[in-house]
Length: 65
Image (cartoon, rainbow, N blue to C red; front, side):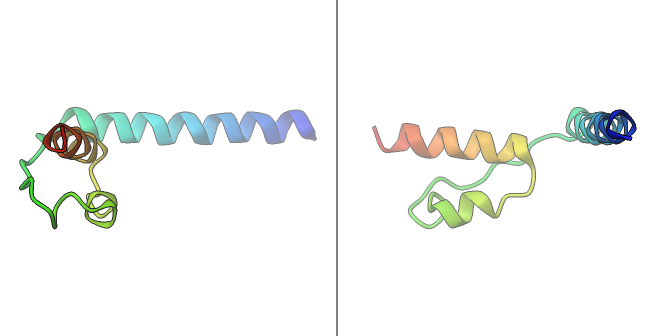
């Protein structure tokens, strides 16, 4: 029973990763403003695309230097 549950969980995680990867490969990141309002943690967390969120976080970190 435990083996079957593990197999189902691994299969579900694999499907989720494949779907997320496919969506990210076919999407071009949009440029977001880099200012005080756009660099708050809430604003960065509000970006739904993981690539855009990473780019924005990096740009905001560079702005603070």
